Amino acid sequence: MRLLLLLAAFLLASPLAAPAHAQEPEWRQSADFDVLLEPYGFEPETLRLEAGRPVRLRFVNSGQATLTFSAPGFFRAARVRSGADGEAVRDGTIRLAPGERRTIVLVPARGRYKMRSANFIHRLLGMTGRIVVE
Image 1: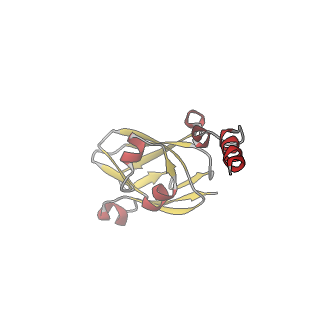
Image 2: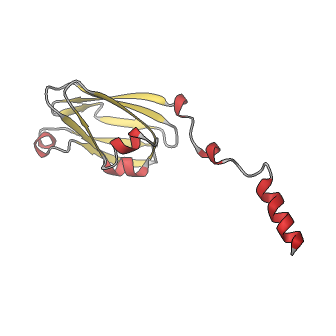
Image 3: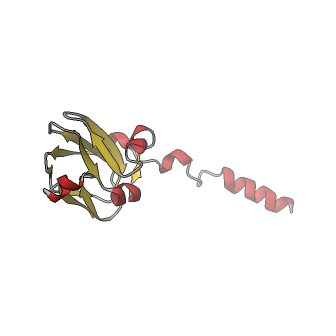
């Protein structure tokens, strides 16, 4: 019995076990992508990202009214940097006042996702797009 406890203690203390912080991505080395929210549209209309690679998404509202970027499936599947970024996308939607900018850092998961305005009328007028993560 002592031998098993000694063996277990040795394995837990061995350098083979990766420290918890080794699982975190290197956020400072993330690629930058700009997402422009325009009245009734997004630029780019299709956002192409690499799965598993940290990215910094910079959202900019170029309109004269509050605009939204809604992609609940995308944000739910991604690993969003904790803190203010996680809080900003908790419901899957980012709201930006006129001229406001916000940066969200995350690691996207492979898949195809819808992005759209949370405002029904803006969606009808073309504020939709997609996110492709390969």
